[in-house]
Image 1 (cartoon, helix red, strand yellow):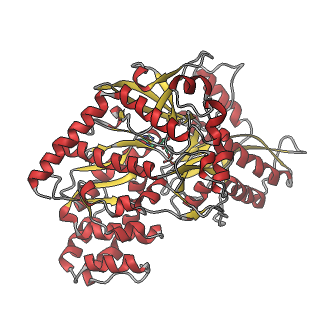
Image 2 (tube, helix red, strand yellow):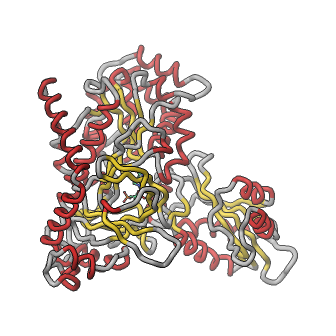
Image 3 (cartoon, helix red, strand yellow):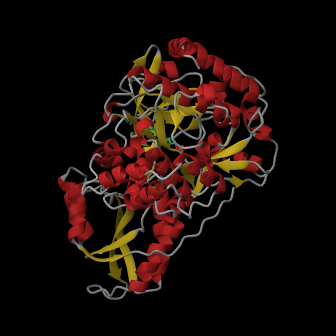
Length: 581
Ligand code: AMP
């Protein structure tokens, strides 16, 4: 593309963003009309709208829905019934979300509109970044993109993560004119189904082209931290590959091997020496700018549950600008960060009205249910978004909590506050209180067989270890002996296994590829949970309403627990994984 046409395209693009954010009401009304006209005769909507596409009727009759309300409809299509059970437009696949329902990953239908929206987000968020940072046109991005396992539903449709489905689609394959910069990794590395080979090759390609790298990225910062830790453990092998111009034998994915071998080229001892010198330094502080000296920023989501990983990333990046560029999910895309260079804690996302029809449920202490349109949200209020999309979700409750922080033209901007029911997360998994309670209940049955009872428990997501892992603090009591208890080591190790085995599939997938470490049960002395309660009472908790928190975040509370730990257990027994719709 010539510079002139690049610039004129850029001007048009900027106008697109200005138009979208200035005409929010009209565009939202149009999007709703389009969706209702398409879906009014689906089995799901017909019950409420009787074929009408009228907005007022929609607001009056269509109920707010949770996953449990739509699950059976989605499963029917996954099991082979016609798409028009839920969608007026053919369903081309399913997206597996990190959210879970009954221990299984939630599954959402999708079609090309979803992929178009994702392409829109990729395109415009990089446009916004290139407006704020100069000199990106000719550089490359070292971006840790991966494809995860793809399943096939009984109806023969693919089910995978949203990014996997995008990278395998023609929207990615034919992206040339829709992308602002190229990657250091060939597509074959992204498409490789083995994440370890893929990660190794991403790093190798990124190091070989280190002088061209202007951006380092990953969808979430936990992935980036994991990539750097992997490099810490594997840089010698990478240097050997570069020194001799020979790729490690264990890279056996043929397409990956062929494409990366071409980039590796001939032996390059100078580069190998240089990289070795940097990696050999005692501290890895600032390793990212040391290895990629022209990198101008990191693009990776660092809001919500990811904030916990910021200090580690900043250690490695020497505080290179960290850009959380978009807010996206398996249900829909939401918006873009229009002020990319702001501090991670100040990030807000401007909702784009063309992506879905958005409504907002006011999060309020009173029981009143107030639902407003995107244009009617109020500054400083907290809301949960409700999604009506092009592939079968209507007034779907997302579970995320957002705060309105401002407006870009007439488009509201939201700060991501928290994911509604999240309790534990050390990587990309979501463990809800229900998941954890269920898993501990299963383990209690193992304890039954010994002379032990679980009196109280709480949990903690420990990311000070690599990889991060779950810690459960357990207070035990003998069934028949009040004062002294004898710990049954075998039973407790089995409990660790049963808890992990009972957690959701995403947790188990990450355990299997070692992105999450072995869960630990730490047994504490009797009376510890009384001490914990005393502590929370001194912090203002009410004695009549006190409940042991299912997860502990306060460092003082953790110190109280840690002081009383007298036995620790974990297991490396492998966990089972299954997919069923
Ligand atoms: P998934 O459907 O697995 O892609 O997960 C989507 C969820 O990830 C959202 O509902 C949010 O809870 C979270 N998420 C996505 N983007 C962001 C973001 N920019 N900041 C914070 N959380 C996010």
